[in-house]
Image (cartoon, rainbow, N blue to C red; front, side):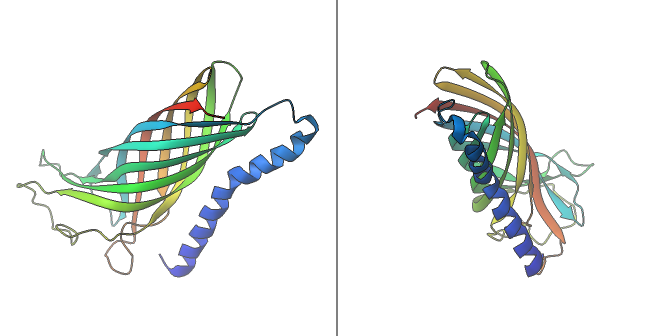
Length: 228
């Protein structure tokens, strides 16, 4: 990815990350005439998730999903009815798994990330069970990796086998759908998400890949408690 494309992507990420704040500000201006109708609330909690990951390589590599785990601290601020901002700081496992038709084993490369994600949280209804939509972006920094090369692994050797991966900041977009169960001050959230990176794991200047962007599906459960 050249510098101009990188700057374009970063500007897109910054703009997208500001959408929740802009949306809340717009709604607050509209609701000023009836400021007593709703009181903002703040939730704090924890999250556990499982993800199914791969990397969009070009040239392509035959892959299966690599299963990873996600542990996060969650802050959710609901500034207007049905509209809030959700911030997550997480330890997230991603990466990829290479497969061969003739082998039962597979090569895996797990990458551990420190992840910061921000979402617009749009909910529907006022009952105990409320559907919601998440739209947001994330920044992830690699803090560790684990490589598994089976003894019988015989495909063409890749240049990155046995070599540490470059520590490149990852950024991208994510969206999800879920259900929230509200029981007094406690909120239980269940959601599924799709995530796609806008930058590559490898630099196009120093590798044979024109694309190496991570992507994945995930399922999360979050337990939140209202604190304000």
